Length: 187
Image (tube, rainbow, N blue to C red):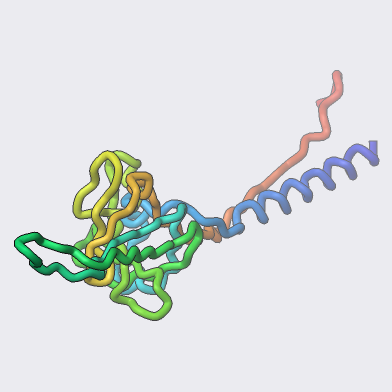
């Protein structure tokens, strides 16, 4: 009988420790319109939050490096194209650098230039998660403004979502009583 009560106490302590550690872990979570509104964070507060992107975003643009001339009545284009790419890998850290409206956030992932940012906002088709915004999305690609220039990105980047580190450290008290049982005939 003593062994059973010791075992129950040990289980109770183990459960309490697991409950406490489970409640205080920090994880990355989706940044959504609901989370933003419920958090009460201001635009200034958001500038102190570390953001992450949940998937790769690849921006691409081409720059003509040729010259156009008319020769013998024909238009000749000489040279070629230079392709530029910007790759923002899944998990890349970003910070809020520009917030034109309450539901639009310019997040910069560029360590050297805060003017290189991508716009994110709540997407009603994706549970109002803050996803990548474009000037225009079509079936195959989107047109993005980045660093004062127009870039394209694949349509799969339309669901690129912002994540934040989130830890719920609210105090929770659990009172546990382990019953030892009751025999027939006891009062």
